[in-house]
Image (cartoon, rainbow, N blue to C red):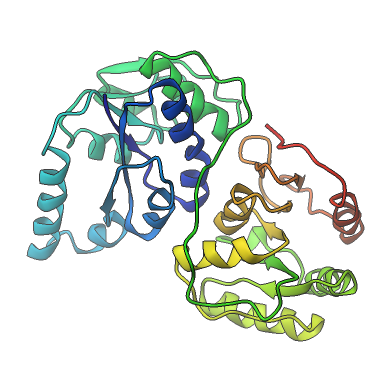
Amino acid sequence: MRVLIVKTSSMGDVVHALPVVHDIRQAKPEAQIEWLVESTFAALPRMHPGVNRVHAVAWRRWRRKLLDRDTWRAMGELRSQLREQRYDCVLDLQGLLKSALWGRQANGPLMGFDTASAREPLATWLYARKAKVAPNMHAVNRCRLLAAAHLGYPVPTTLPVFGIVPGPGSWKLRSRASAALIPCASRPEKIWPEARWITVGKRLSSMGLTPVVIWGTEEEQVRAERIAAGCEGEVPPFLNVHDMAALLAQTQRAIGLDTGFSHLAAALGKPTIGIYCDHDPGLAGIVGPGGVASIGGKGQVPSLADVLALIEQQRMPQRTNV
């Protein structure tokens, strides 16, 4: 059996889909599994030993240059890759028109959510087969149930196994006893006050952990440097997804906003606290085997006291929250 998983972005969404690989491997050990993903996040499925091949789509870059000849050449080359061999199942775990259109480029039947389950119902017009999955489930469970429905194996009842194994990175932590602070956010509404991050960093320092403040953009770098200066932490250079995974694998725990790096830390087995300032964590909360917690919600900015209390509670075994 040949399966192509279509889950292109964003980082947290790709992380949430990773347990599907383990599920397929358990049910169908002979399966050949490939993955279509945005080039920025291609390192994630490449870190999974159960993925045989990764196809990178640079749609975020291509869509800005649709009139360029090089763009059409690159898209044509990707389409040729996807049609080299026939797939028994092209599994769209994203449920968007974008992902469905790219899935249709592959040589095989495209399968996905039904109209009531897909994030963009228009995408379902492109599916050869559809399956109903409750929309109010956590993203990890939605992916696992959809795969089981289309590939014909029992719905998994085990905890999710993310299965990624980071290789050596380009940057080493100053101290082996470190904790990641992840104040990155895609929207201003998600930001948690800097003064609270500094206090959290100081608490971690008092526990013998060096705060490592993560960033991804120039604006976030400036914020990270201010936070690190206030709690005697360190700030790494800009790191790609592969190198960031290697860094997070070296840490002892993580505290972060609702962002891809936080979900990645949890998937790597790190005790992780997710701070949600503008989104309900019920559908996309922190999930992982190392003890996790999600706090806050839409219009419910977590207090400093609540986060500090969770840091203390995390010294005891926690659940995966799925």
